Image (cartoon, rainbow, N blue to C red; front, side):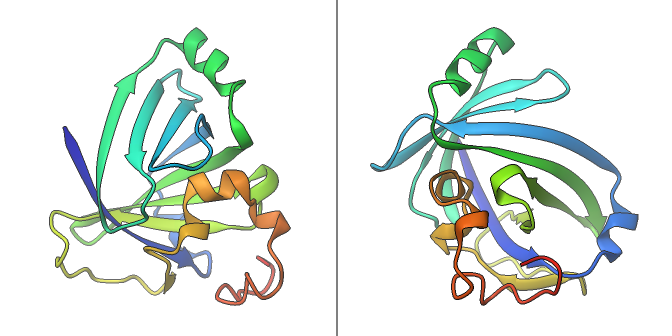
Length: 169
């Protein structure tokens, strides 16, 4: 059993792009619509597919169960999704002794860029790079399961108010 401890932030600027060491195209969808857990199928362009189960509460510390899937089963499950498919390119960006994952969304969530960092414990301090913007940990609308139901392109100006980066809203 695995536990995920991560913080999420909006990204500002483009300086991080020069630091990225890899990028992976990801398609994912959610098989549940509400309830206490989210069940996700994820397909990476490199041929890896997984089924993931997490509690829906957007907390800093969450249970995460992940299982490998054959590609044919993942594709079949993707068609059973609730809401929009999530499309993004995940960039791996080393910073100091840490590694950030920066998701640049496309499709119905185009314009949204979120940085995540996994922690060893909930009270761990981190050095925030200057391209990190507002923290959105715990804000449901920024979690992929919520973006599948209420994509970024459908957000009102008020909902985008904490992401006032010119050209991204």
